[in-house]
Image 1 (cartoon, rainbow, N blue to C red):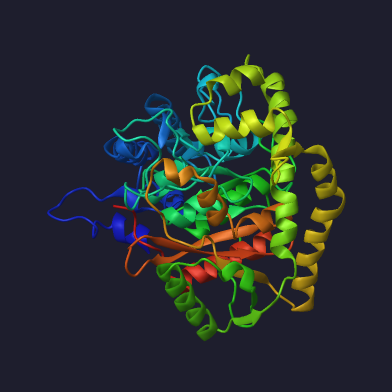
Image 2: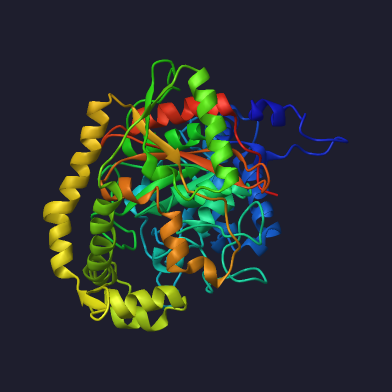
Length: 493
């Protein structure tokens, strides 16, 4: 195990101190609980790594003083002989649209730079109550309205936008960009993101981390800057699937999850998810499926008629329509002191500003010429009444008919492209949410598991499992087993 490897000093040379940033969150919790490592030493190691890799723009706020104070409290608790908490002394990071007491919650946008909540969002409250140490707030695609992380705001390095942990010239993914990069570059072992159409899974696929989009409603939404109340959810992100399961257990309750027995597992593979793949992704995914088959998994070919058509009738109509009222309510009820007009006037990302000004504020949707724009409400009502229920039924029927544990597919079709303004284009957006979006719109849980580095690019490739509503723990168990079979990917450079 990596924890034993590091803590016995084998990871160091010439008598130098062991590298504590190689620990998983679960290993770190065990090390702090046993007294082999202090939380302060662990926290200092991650803070140093974050400061050394400031060029990646992973953080909006790195809270050195607050993190060290919390670490010392964790060490004092250990010294007192009190029972260990599940995450006692373990450093984590938090996406900057999730409220953390005493720290700015900017949602990556200028108008909210002065908003400092007095209390944690409930999802973060659970982690702090379990002993987690918050290192800081992570950067993100502005207002979570995109998948590139190419945000001109709050940069700590010389180049704009959050940068990929494996190659800073590449896209980080988003919208939970900073959390994924911080984990991929080992500035933290775990953290929180949010997911509307792929935003904890997509950046983890590109940065070699594991994550869970939980079933809708599994986690509280309070205290999180929104896009869509029927699609948004927080989600845990971490170095390993075991860590993701630990965070999920702290947030949602329940007993510990053990890795599943892969023998007899049935995974469905639909052709809709296998289009637009680059060579590295296809090769890594096919190799992973071969390993799974050899371990006793049955991969079942399935067809899902109208999947992408139904998804299109739900995705944009719901997100763009709900974004208006949900953001107005959030700004008012959370005491931000900012109006929607002030928020929009300050948006710096051209793609996000254009979306808010042309679509969200006037409640419009794109349409073919000559109309170009149409009122969003009819499409929204149809999505809720007809198209989303049909999408939910399609998934339920597919799982039942083929007796599936989950659907399996590449999390994103391609490895990370070049960073830059073009990474925020509508074309790139559509390509990279191709596989993550449908399950999101059906409210289903999904886990992202890193499966290797691309043969030519040496960039991470991810595999996703989407399961029936409420099957979160089963998916986590499957993800843990797959990670155990394939091994974890190395850290970003």
